[in-house]
Picture 1: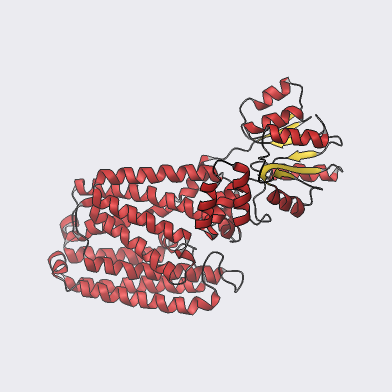
Picture 2 (picture 1 turned 180 degrees about the vertical axis):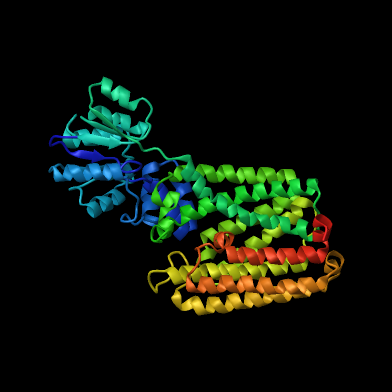
Length: 478
């Protein structure tokens, strides 16, 4: 685009790869959920007032908001040519002003003022008053921008606005197009399918009972599908609540919503769809399973909103969420989860929760508290102590289980259960040591699946347990 005309940029979806209203909404849920929900319902029919209210509750850090690189480069080139670059958005004027000041645009921007929603025809009229018809070039990304392009000179169309470029060229406008589409693979990343392996815990009651019937397997697989959908729904909610914290993180800044690779509104739709899938499958498995998955989703939501920022409560909640998976496996298959099995799983995952925080602290760039968490580097030794207690607790409970009537019936060679304590202890201590040193992934479960030495210890444990039960002899013949 050439000439001395100002270059006017829409903000949401054009200059930024995000939406300021939704940024404020999710930031508000993170900081002040009750005030945010009250403001939303009170101003639901008045978009300008809603934008002003949410911007006052939780204004985002404009320096962290993801830019659309092609448009940012266009703005830089225009400024180098001596042209004025102006932001014009339906977002609240206070936020537009902050963006204008931060990026050195100006001398002013255009935005909604709490009474008038600066969108479509309203925005077009404001720009015509300021620069005259065809007195500016305009970049936008939505059907609402058609009214503005119509009174602009040159048009920059971001993303697939159906028929807009063709109609503008037919009306005599010079048009350039920028690919602003999001990709399904990025949304799939947000679902974190690699985390679904955690739902393998639903197999534990079936394995503990040595119930290998195909019908039981089918029920548990359906339960795993439901938990996977529920977990992905909560992962998205967690990412939307943690946008600012993720952008401050060395690797989480690349997550789909934090980076702007996937629009926030797409994440919101996906969250609702996944939750409905989870509850639908749960309904087919029966009331006990629905109850467990409902508790899991409610506790996960509470964790995302508040509990993860509370020291010690967060790791206890993580351990509880894993334990609920074991309960869900029993509810799906119609079996019963041993009390000692549940108690054993809890300290194991309490240990892994501490490992996760120790890893984050070891890799943190400063001694301050982790963004969105209640821990600083000074807490590493305390986390190490709790991880040690969790390890000892898990081993004691496993040993105690070997003396129960269920263990006596299922594992005739109980001395091999005692022998299995050695690889269990070695694996847990290995995870704790590597986490304390910052020598593993931010997610200990993901790390464990890639750690050959750790997988060897897990396989040795399972082999000893299967041999103790007589299953190896029955299946393999020795």
